[in-house]
Image (cartoon, rainbow, N blue to C red; front, top):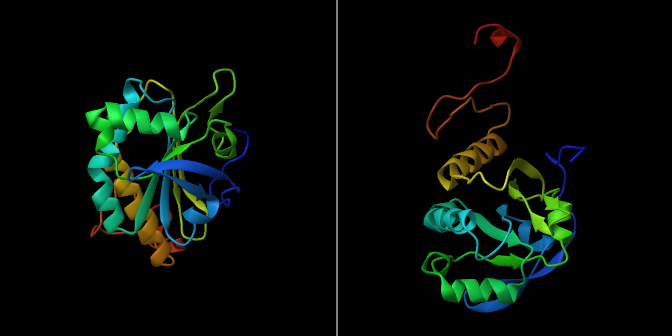
Length: 189
C-alpha cells in the first residue's frame, strides 16, 4: 500500500454475503449511513480465522448496540461461507454478514490482497457513516486480532466524531479524559 486509506471514501463494490441463513446482496452503499467494520481474513476452514471470527461474534451485540454493523470478507465464495457456517460450531454463532470476494475486488479496494496467493491479509477497517475509513489495521497472516481492542477503537472514533476539537489519548476508554489540542498543551504532556 503506497498511500494511506485513512479519511478516503470506500470504493464501489457489489458482492454476495451469507447472512442469517440466506444469500444477500451487499454493496458499498450498505456500509454508508451508519458505522461499519469490515474485517478481512485469508480463508474459510483455516486456523487463526475462526478464532478471530468467533471473537468478533462474541462482541457483535456490543457493536450493534453502538450502531455498528460488522462485515467479514474473504476471497472465498458465499457458498463456502455457508458450508463453513454449517460445519463449525464457532462460525455458526456468527450473526453478521460474511461477504464472498472471489474476484478480489473488495480486497484490492482496501489494499489487503495478496496477489500471489489470491487471499486477503488480516485487515480491519472502521468506516464512518459518510463512508470514510477512520481506522485501518493490517496484520500478517499469523497474527490474530482482538475484537475487544477493536470495540475500544470504534468507541474512540465515534467519540472524536461527535466531540469537535477533542482527541482521545492512548488507551482511552469511554468516560476517561480526552484532550483538546492547543498551544497551551505543547510540551506539557
